[in-house]
Amino acid sequence: MARSHPLQTARARRAAAVATRDRFDALIVKTRITAPIDGVVTARHVQPGETVREATAIVTVADLKRVRIEAEVDEFDAARVALGAPVIVTAEGFRGASWHARVEEIPDTVVGRRIRPEDPGRQIDARVLPVKIAPGEPTPLKLGQRVEVEIASSETAPR
Image (cartoon, rainbow, N blue to C red; front, side, top):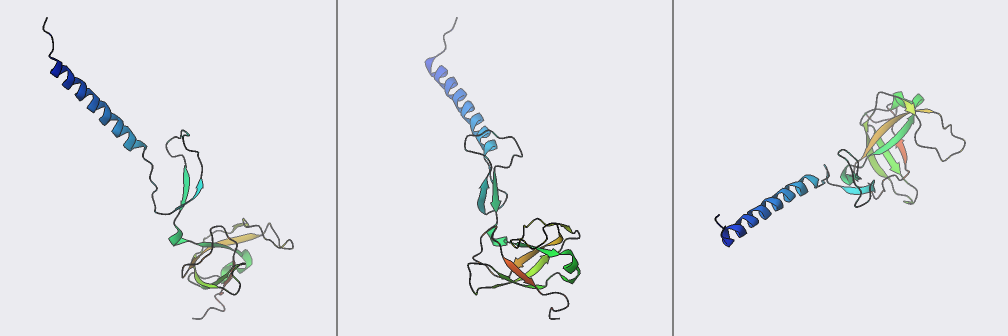
């Protein structure tokens, strides 16, 4: 029986090791997690080392360049809100400051109130139109911060 040469054995072992490394490199590439957008992580849903399945939300990422304000317009005022209507935004903690914005999106559906009013005298089971408002300039406002909005109605908006 012929004996294999030590150099041939070493080459075979090296080739096997390279193949194993390449296989693990391919597996690592498949486990790399990337966000579909640039942004800031606003919430983490799993802990490091935790096993997750495909399509499991790991983090929430927000694109702070496209911050939008959601305002609830009473259903009785819904007909007076127009796409592109000017909006003035104010917030507590920014005394005297206001920001210009515009109504960017008006849905076709009136829904139950989701934002709980701070005034105990206001009805909490009201039906509202959840409009989206786009600030016209960067603001120092934080995600989730309560703001007051004044939407120019289609009756008062300049034409």
